[in-house]
Length: 127
Image (cartoon, rainbow, N blue to C red; front, side, top):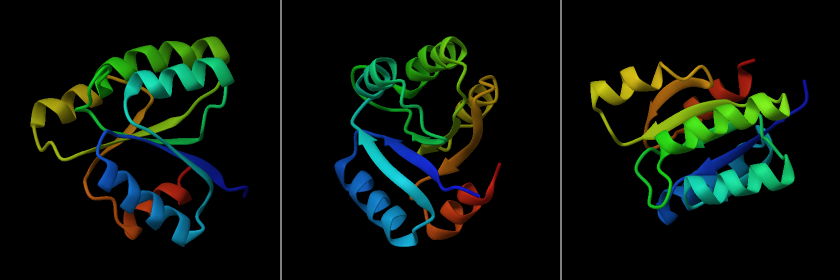
């Protein structure tokens, strides 16, 4: 089974650094890329059509937050006929956020930060 690409969309530079290092150390994914907010990621996806198999998405970000990104991204997926599996990676423990996440068909799961090896192995193994 070919390895998947995994992209991180989060405004926390330390979280991104630690998560990216963990991902690279595991060799579970073929490629990692990171973005600081939803609009930066969306513009990249729209212009390159490079949609990864997996996205780790934060909710609280400047410019375009995770919810706004999800709305835009779901329509982009339809236009490009490509699908990505999105995992919301958040420090939020709000039940409302977890419930809201279920309304987006492209969201696979709601993960609590930080992302650990066990979570990455589970993500890499899912179809």
